[in-house]
Image 1 (cartoon, rainbow, N blue to C red):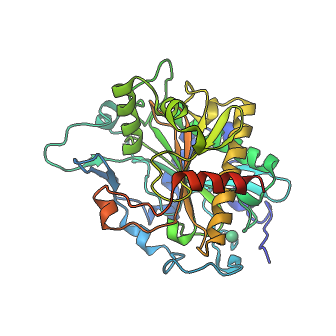
Image 2: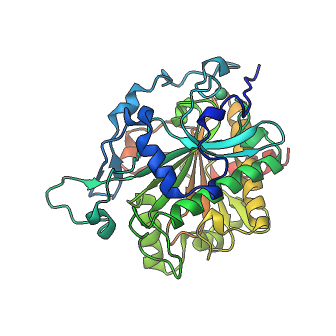
Length: 380
Ligand SMILES: [Zn+2]
């Protein structure tokens, strides 16, 4: 049975009901003061692998998470009795929105990978990527939030009504906007400034679903990281733009073979990339490649992107189940400079091996057959 809790049940944790009604400064202040989170603050250190620009941030306290999974075991039918969210073990909530059944909400991650530094550090504000000849790493500061897709344990994008998912996406857009626009006091300007967009820091939105894909909680959620250092995939997209004078999304819209189209929604398109690394890898690309952020989407675009995301996730779960695999995937939102806006879906259909760690991916599927399977699946 799905565990249920009401907004009244968690009223003591509600710091703000509506993001728009609180300032980011207040949210940050609340995070710094939260005693529970203080036990698990990260090391505020970021190292960069000089070979490929991959970033490594450190938080050894994350290994102490009480709900950590033992391994890639199949999910029990219902584990809501062990779910810390359903047991109302909350951190301060900064946004709540009603759904047709239950509600969606945003709160702080108890085990953050980014944490606000107590005082402003001028070097950070002035130099987001300073040279580091002594390899001491860079100061990493920011905030780490969770968006719970639904208060109902087993509800998520693939099994909620479209209208409810649009509300969830709308709240994600509002959060993205707030972080990027109100962080002037404690975050360096996003680099490089794209056109007249004046934003601060970088917002990384990801979703892990299933133990094999790194999800430590089964209650459906998105993770939102906001920090001062650009993730390497964003940086790579920017380099792509500088080399080709074409954003990556536009390149894919122009160049990806038409037979790899999964579905054209009108303002967004779902494709299998020609360089698919694993079965069911997909990109959901906004056709207006001048837009970079979710909060820049108009209502029609937002709704189509939401629909595309539901279709992509639903297809991955159904196809993995059919193949006898435990459904699991990662989703990333690519809203960095020089990318346009695209969502990437990475199904955990194969393990990473040694070849992959050399940058040589061995894929046990054919792109064109996969695209056909996905097309047949998403119309069901
Ligand atoms: Zn739960």
